[in-house]
Length: 283
Image (cartoon, rainbow, N blue to C red; front, side, top):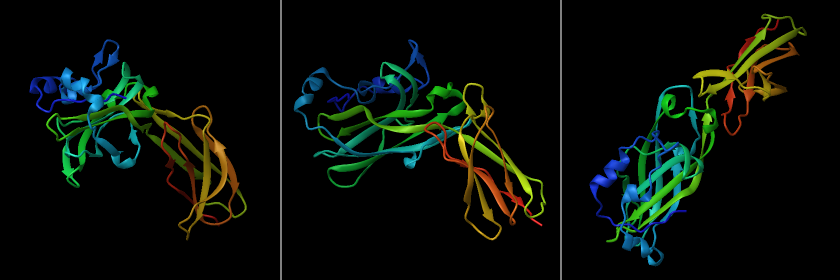
């Protein structure tokens, strides 16, 4: 945890120079992650008094509406991050970023906010909810598959007191970043006589951030599901594992008209996905 007491009146050059550094810029073999000093500025004297200061209290942090960030092989996504914080003098600013790595000295991924200052809306005289946005260029910033999974969330808040007291925690929380998944389904032959065998195939793939293509997701359990023509509910028929190429294949007996689909529950690095239902006409 990093907790700093800072001075509200900081040099604009310091903050602007820090924020001008691209999040994905390599720095000594790692990526640059903004610090409390760069974001808010600080004085040595104020830092020494930090133990005696009343620090802002961050009560909640939300990233992307609470949903995992799911990335394909390209594209740009902008999402909102927010926090609620309190201090007896009120809250004047806040900061949130997402980062990936062993610690703040070994960072291999950073998503920093677009704005220099958060938009803070007072809930009461002591509490505010502050919002920022983060834009991620998937094709540029996601350069290796090991970035998928759990990311750290930095949360910071600056009080509206004369000293500009702030709370800063690089390990305030975590959030998921996942590789976009795709799933197909095909049932044949069609039409088919009642009681005859049909073959249902499919393929589970996910984004490969290193090749910029979609590749098969191997040895994953996927449910084969069926719904009758006049129903809105799918029922699981059996579970099949994908092969080394992400392919799925099984056989079932034809009974009534309806739709077959594959359903994948997801993993920590890959989101859940359902294939579009494929209709079977049973004669």
